[in-house]
Length: 572
Ligand SMILES: [Zn+2]
Picture 1 (tube, rainbow, N blue to C red):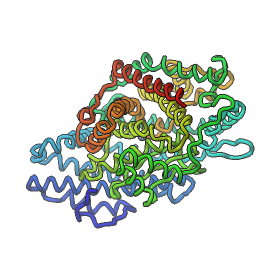
Picture 2 (cartoon, rainbow, N blue to C red; picture 1 turned 90 degrees about the vertical axis):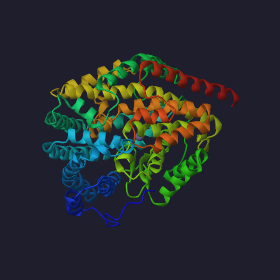
Picture 3 (tube, protein in one colour; picture 1 turned 180 degrees about the horizontal axis):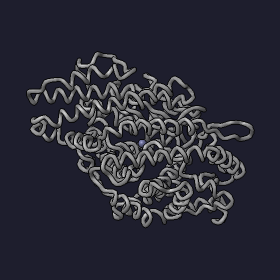
C-alpha cells in the first residue's frame, strides 16, 4: 500500500474547513522552481485530496447506515454543503497553479499524460457560481436517501424494510407475492409527490449548472463532467437502439419462458410475477445473515486467488462491512474506497437472497479493484471511471459464479447461475430505459411531472415489456422512482451496460483459460485510471466497443453458457 509523505500530520481528522485550509495555503503559496518541485506538489495535492476523501467517505457511510441518526445526517450535510464547496474552490486554484506552470507540459507524458487530461477537464468544467448549486444538489440528494431509506411495507401487520418485503416476491404463492408487491407500491406511492418535487428541483438546478458552464443542456454537461473521453452522447443513443434490436427479443423470450414456468397465460403475467417461483418450488436460500455471507464470500474469493480472500478477511477484521437489511438504512449497495485506509467499506441491504449473493460478488469485485490500486501514489489514478469500475465488479460476479456451490447444492447452484445469466440479458433493457429517460428529462427541462411519467411508460414499451399492468397503471408510471441513481448520480447508469460488455469478454477469456483470463483482469485493474479506458481494456485482452455487432456476439456467448447449464441439469 502507498505510504504518504509527512506533508500532512498523521491521523489528521477533518471536522471543518479550517482543518484543511492551512495545507491548501502552503501548497498554493509554495514556490515551484524545478520539475521535481512540481511533481512533489502534485503528490502533496493528491495526499490532501485523500485525507479529505477519507473523512467525507466516513460521513456518507455513517449516514447511509443510520439515516435516522440526526448527528450523522448533520455531519454528512456539513461535509457536502460547507466543507466540500470550500474544498472544490481550493482544488480549482491548485489545479490551475499546477497546469499553468511552464514545466507542467514537460513532465513525462507516459506518467502524467492522463493526469493532464483530467486536470484540464476539471478546469473547463469549474464555475464559481456552480459551487453553491452543487452543494444544494447534495442536500437534495441526501433528502432522497432519507425518504427512500425510511420506506417500509406493511405486511400482515408488520412494518418491513423494503429489501425484506422484496424477498416475498420470490414466493411460489401468488397471493403472497401480490400482497407484498401491493404493500411495497403503496408505500412508495405515498411518497410520490415528495419524490416528484425533489427530482423536479434537482432537474432545474442541474440545468442551471449546465448553462452556467456554457452548455446547452445538462445531458451534454454531465457527459463531459463524468470524464467520458472515449464516446459521445450520440454513441450512447446508438447503444439504446442496439439494445432495442439485439437484446429486447431475447429478454422478452426469457419473460415468456418464465410466464410458462409459472403456468400463466401471457395476458395474465402481472407485475408481481416477474421473480416468482412455480408452485411447489421453494425460492433459493443461499445464506442466513451477513456473517455467513462474508464467510462464504471469503472462501469463494480465496479459490479464485488466495490474495483476494485475504483482502476480504482484512476488511472483516477492520469492521468494513455493513451487510444486513434493517430499518433506517439507505437503499442499495456500494463499495466505498477509503483513500487513507487503502481498503474500502462495503454496504448492502442483504435479506438472504440469490440477488444478495450477486451483489456481494459485485461489491467484492469493486473491493479487489480498490486493493489492486492501493499502491498507486496518485489519488486521481486510484479513482477509476465508472465504466472501468463496473467492469471490475461485473466480471467478478461471472468469474465467481462457478464457485457459488458454497451456497447451494448442485441443483440450486445451476438455478442460481441460470438466474444470473438470464438477469444479464434482462438487465440491458432496464439500463437503456433508465438512461434514455434521463436523456429526455434533461433535453426537455421544462417538462411536467405527468409528461415525465408518461415518457417513462413509453420507454418501458420501447425496450420491451410483456407485463399486464391493468388496474395498477399508477404504479407503472412512478416505476422510475425506485432507481436511486436517477436522483443522486445523474447519468451514472449506462456504464453498467457498457461494463457488462467488458465483463462478458473478461469472462469469455476466463472460460477459455482461467489463469490467462484472471491475469488479464488483474493487469487491467492495477492500471487504475492511469490510462484511457480503451487502452486499459486492450491490456485486459478485451475490446472497448458497444456496437450492435459486439452486443450480438456477446449475447450469443451468454446463450451458449445457458445451454451448458441445460447439459448440467441432465447430469443432476
Ligand atoms: Zn458497482
